[in-house]
Image (cartoon, rainbow, N blue to C red; front, side, top):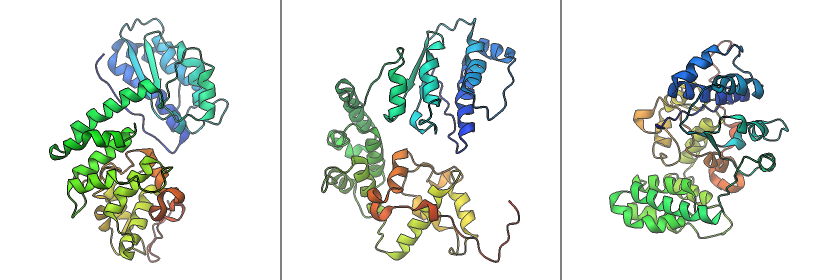
Length: 336
């Protein structure tokens, strides 16, 4: 089966997110199989955007068009971060529906669901006889993961730093996100630091409380390399710009935030946005100058969790509830 991937956009509107899960699957199947597309077109059930009736979405967009078709090749579906679906504490949430109904799909379907081990999700899938559970601390999986991380480090480290691949892979402790952020950090060292110094900082970040999460240590190491928050100007710009990125209802691009900041009474101009985020490519997407019109989002949700938890992030904590800028008093934007 040829590689075909499309991610359903995450949305702050939970109804829209549910709708997109099923429509994305239907759209991908239509792209791959003309016969499915034809069958989907014959489906008479009328759907409106925002429908959250899982049974209707599942039946109308998947089960009914698939009935009578003979798609012999294996179909592999990945549903990532199910715990972020927004209704995991509900008895009738998406996790419960998938656990009860995914087995109704044809036998050539295989579904991989990733999730934090939230209690309601674990209980729902434990009751499903058609599911197999694998935990990240599984011994066999750990061996394979460590090997994969080593291969990743070897491939993604700069050529003059690849001899550090083995020790960095061990330091990752099975966390791909740690390896990815570390390699990106070493590729583009902060001003005044050599690649070897970046490696030394990463390997030396075990000092202190051993109970601290490895990703938290990594994030602190990277942020401390780029921001001296003892400087009040740096501290103000970091809190203001990063806070506004993370407080936005919808992800903002560098250009969008710079434009908005020109209308904020505490800001003289919006030009400092790029200077704050340009070196954070190991943690944020679309921060290069060529990507300034694309939305800036964390490469991993754990970075947002880290920044918005004061106990974990310390001086780098972002209070997103108080990060929204105030418009200049002389400006009137009119009704929104």
